[in-house]
Image (tube, rainbow, N blue to C red; front, side):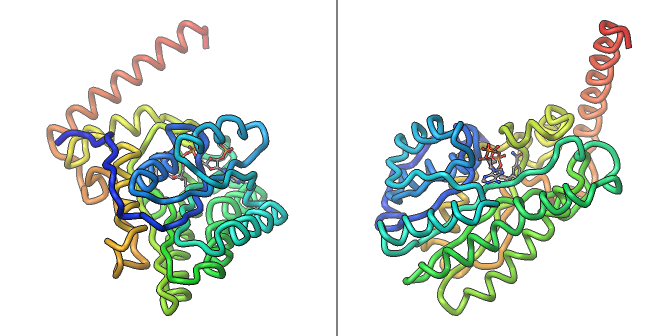
Length: 293
Ligand code: NAP
């Protein structure tokens, strides 16, 4: 089965206006989702976290035909107040929200989870989990005709995965938030869902140790025997954000080539995985010898 990287033009999101947070580069998962919904007629508001990224994100936003591009650090109350003021003034309301944001101190994603500091625990939870609740409440207040909200999670929120540590704890809390928010807003025809994506090489992923190994491991051991694309996440996002997903809420949808269903590696996958580990070990040894450590 081929990976899907091509966009399908259509009208499934025509007349819908949505806020997308988390576009850092053209590899960002948020960018994949934004590309898909824009191709289906959605009008977008796009944000960037720091002024230094304004140029890059503005040029990506232009390609998406976004009508609002604004600074929004999710830890900055003034930024968020301004963002929602702009949306309300310009659009009068909102139809969908995409939250594709996470952060943790990368030094604490190595070694035992037990060593997580209080400061990094709170910061990781604030940016990666609470920000969705905050944005959901602000968005719901201006979703006058129902709506759909989407966040991004990872299998590390349910199972222990190497190098995920406190991010796993934040994702577990994020997934629980999705269920509580779905109940809070359901009576107003607002749906809240998460996509649990397989590994994708993005800026955020570069903070996770041995990410090359994680990518190859998934490719070898997922039922579809491959990794996923951001456009495929976007296509699943389109289902949840459009009326196609009209009766789906509080759900976590896996877009991971099926990896999460595996309980044990199959023999072929296990043998290939053993080769992979041996090759990586040999590379590490050679590198250590070259640097004299
Ligand atoms: P990405 O391109 O690096 O996107 C992460 C985004 O979070 C960036 O735009 C980043 O902005 C933003 N961000 C971090 N702190 C922020 C803050 N305080 N305020 C506003 N924005 C902030 O990486 P990604 O992989 O697409 O990540 C998107 C989401 O997908 C995350 O929730 C991640 O956990 C999830 N996910 C990723 C994978 C994967 O393998 N890549 C798998 C499953 C789930 P800056 O770049 O400016 O900091």
